[in-house]
Structure formats: C-alpha cells, structure tokens
Amino acid sequence: MSITLHPIDPFNKKELRQFLQFPFDLYKGNPYWVPGLWTDEYDLFSKVHNPVLKHCDLKLIIAFKDGKPAGRIAGIINHRENQLNHTLKGRFGWFDVIDDLEVTKSMFSAIEAWIKEKKMSEIEGPMSFTNLDKAGLLVEGFDQMPTIATLYNHPYYAGHLESLGYVKAVDWIEHQLNCPTELTERFVKFSEILKEKYKVKTVPIHNKKDLVENAYKMFDLINRTYKDIHGFIAFEQEQVNLYVRKYSKILMPKFISLVADEQDQLISFGLALPSLSKAFQKAKGRLLPFGWFHLLKALRKNDTLDLLLIGTDPAWRNKGVHALLFYDIMKSAIEAKIQWVESNPELETNTNVQLLWKGYEYRQHKRRRTYKKIVN
Image (cartoon, one colour):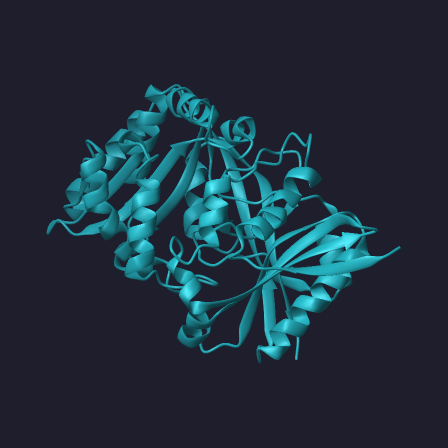
C-alpha cells in the first residue's frame, strides 16, 4: 500500500478542479449526498469573489492510495477570527476520504503539522471560512436528505477522527416538522396579542427590491444576534455585499418574515426556501445546460421547506416575537401545500429555538458535530 499527499494550489483552477471532483466520485450513486454547485465552490476559493480570504491562510491536500485519489482536506487559519476571539485556532474542512484510517491519518498529520508551523494551538472542524458556509460532521441521520446548507458524509468519518484523538467541540441538531394544513385559531390570536402588547409589526416584502433593502438590516441584526454563538465571526461589509447579491437571486419574498418595533427598527427575521436538495442532485453541480431548470422547478413546486436563518435582537428574546415569524412563514407554506419543514442546524444548547417546535408535530432526525484537538 502506498499513500502519497499532493498539495493543491487553490488559485490554480485546474488543480482546484481535481480537489473539488473527489466527493463526486466518492459518493457516486449515494441517494443522500447533495453536491454543491461548481460555480459556488470555485467562488469560495476566489480572492475576487470571497473577501474573507484576505484574512485567511489556506492549505489544500489530496491523498492518493496506490495512485488513485483517496481523500482530500483543507486547513484554514482565519486570522480575523483569532484576533477577535483572542485565540490561536485553525480549522479543517472539505474533509472526504475512503474508509481507510491510514489515509485519514496521513492527511491530518500534514494539516496538524502545518497548523503548528503557523503557531496555532488548536484545530476544529469540519468548518469552512464563515458561519454561512457548511459546517459540522454528520453523526446521526445518514438515511436522511440533507439541506443544501449542510454537509453529508459516510458514517465511518467520525470513527476515523476519534481514533486520531479528536473530541467533540459542539453539536447541532436538526428537526423535521409536519406542516399543518391550517393555522389554529389559538396561533392567530396569540400573534395578534403579541403585536398589540409590544407594539411590533411584520414588515411586508413584496419584491426583490424590498428584499435587498432589508437584507443589510438583517446582516446587522445577525452580527448582534449571533455574536456569542460558538465559532461566529462578525460579517464585514464586503462579505455582506457578496451574500446579498448571491442569495437575493433565489430567496422568495413570500417565505421571508421580518418583524420591526414601534420605531421601525428590525428586531427579528426568518428566512426559508423550498428545498433545493433534489434539484442540486439532478443538476450534478452544474447550472448549465439544464441545472437551472431543476432549480426553478423546485422553487415553484415543492413539498419541503428549509428554514435557513432565524435571528432576534437580544433585547427582544423571550418575548415570543418568533411566533410572528412563524405565522407568516407557515401561512405561506400552507398556501404552497408544503408537507414538511426542515429546521437546519441549531446548537443543541439553543433551547429557545427548540421551544419553537413544541407547537408542531416534529422529530429530531439529524445531528452533526465539530471535532477539536490540541496540537501543540
């Protein structure tokens, strides 16, 4: 058995293509793996399209066993994260591998050595560059369809990491809700009471122009809402501009809910989107020539809705304003004949969010985890 490691230049498109191709081969025929879009993957490694790279050191590796691709991994050091959090932390991501512990060991030995060379003392992953990128190793729910915002991996990945001394950092859990066929009178009255009691209101989003205008307010709220969440790095203006351009193309106004206070200040938001997982599978990572057709079809008619992001100003937590978000989103979901709603990852310690599901039929069906290790 011969294992060799090849460094990849992330700014060389030909070499990067080899790195990005590996999971397509590894998961070929798997009914649950959802590929990302090639354009999005390339943009993540572009200094033109991904401003966070200005703050990052990056190392990409492909492993070969007996001359055939057998694994890949990325090492990331986000210097802005370390400066803001006063840490010496590296990240690993883009981790995929055949079921061979020696291959995994070779790749992590190289990444850990690189992390130590950079004077870091800890490594955590799988994670990407920012908190809107995919993160967390799947440890439960291997027979469930992931959302486009999450990773999928084989069950043996966790065993490989634990064999190398990696331990749990944090867990995220995911829920699937049965969408009701109608809003109960109690739910409707509760929403009306909240509006009257706190003098709050929902902000209508009629079109893409309304969406873009409010998107910047949402990111400001995200920075305040998520600032104490594990691994969060506040978004800079360049990143905000990028995400607004990117996601305003596919977000649908009817599945967006905003709540403002008496002074018209945004205090809570919820974003949802019809599931694109099966459409991404059919597109096989490409928008052309027919990928766009599958995406548009999924946006127009679907039985599953993915909750993408929820945020509430810290000063307004525990006052029930989330109910107003769900009133709007569920009303649109019922009109669209949605059957299931996917929560997307939420920290297992985030009991405030989990209380939101108590009014619905639901099940916790997936769990994902980041692993960490001290390397000095």
